[in-house]
Image 1 (cartoon, helix red, strand yellow):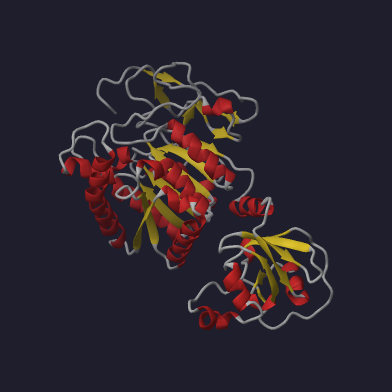
Image 2 (cartoon, one colour):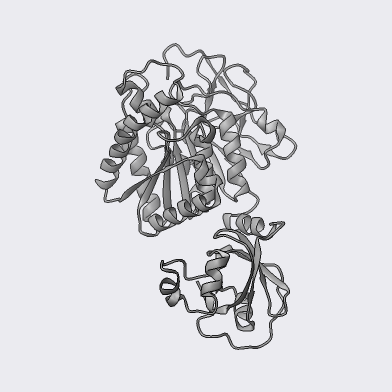
Length: 439
């Protein structure tokens, strides 16, 4: 805590606000009233959680680390002691079978001091130069700490275009899936060395939310210099009250956003609210928590105060709602009766079960799946373009590489990317061998 911090004021219970948020008494936490540091909390006590945390129940977790936590503002070097405790927190998650992705700030903050750049806003080219220098140091720190604990670490640099352009999005998602399946821990940062002002996130809160969306994560944790959402900036308003949960992000919730307290960070409460919108719409729980404590993730599991943004569904539900809600499918594929019956049983569609392709579409587009009679039975995200689909339909998956010259997915549409729009029973026709597969 900064020396000279003014007197502390206890927080009272937050009243429900139109049914969209709830609060908790401050018997275990205090906030600064009228001080110069916005949303900075480093002395909270831990209380035991009475119910399981979304963090412990998640299958896939994304954790975002802010620059103010990772980089010492005085020395410009990595807070190695703190980072070691964070890494130690991740090991139990992996041990119990959870997949973990880190989204890390810090490259620019590390590089600017090394280059002798003055404090304050940087020009774009200065930020890019600082990122180029700092990214090496950041990657080395993660590699050293994780591999010493026998965890394989992978570095991924993303830009805004990687999440907005469909093909690049699919490629990035496929890379993430492969790394996680192979047991690696991906560390992701914005590719500041090549991103221009027009294609930058500008903060890693929204980048983390996009990664959570891309990876189908169940839980996103934003570790920063803020312990959660307040009804107002608690340094300016002594009546500001803490918010435990947000069930719906309304204009009133958005108005509670404050500013970033850190000289090295680019985020703030506004970017965290924007990140929450992305996360919950993808069926992902999101947590804002103070990260300055040692073992910050373990503290959340043990019940440390934080704000949870709650989704209405899960990642699979949100994804399938999006697929089903596509207004204009790019094209259609027609399947045979045996493939139809297997789809109704919840299986993936392989090329062998496809008999016709219509329309122009690319890999990653949503297409209609039609019965032999021409009725739409499902919609799904197709793994091949119309040209490639026409070449491999009716063929076994083992033949794909020989026909196309590259090894694509075995499925034309994976069951996770498929939504049934009708659930009628099909005629009892045996499935052709290889037409479908339970994947």
